[in-house]
Image (cartoon, rainbow, N blue to C red):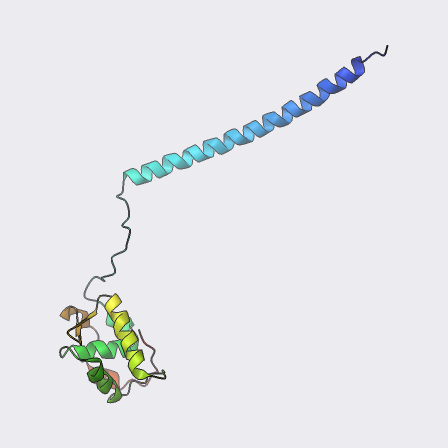
Length: 158
């Protein structure tokens, strides 16, 4: 028979190493748990002080809107609609009679897209086949059509 005490001591040494590694892993896991619990506390305190955010943002801008930040075509359309509701054909004629250039194969389509984008911003609406300003205050800073005719910058739809 062989003396196995040396083998047993080697196994004990290996187990001590595994226990040390397991303790390090346990400490790491405990640190991660504490970090997550801190994040939970922060989130809970943040949500206690505020209401749940809306599912859809309010797309209607607060008025009056500074329409000078819009492209020249959109500014011109808003100015043109200041005089009252107009059909797409009337608006196309207004654009043709101005110096506003539209880089599109079909200018009517560019105007229609610009009008649609203005409507998504809550500035225009189409009723009874005519485009109208949704609120007269939206035109407050856009200027007059004659102001925009002097502009020679190329435009793109809103």
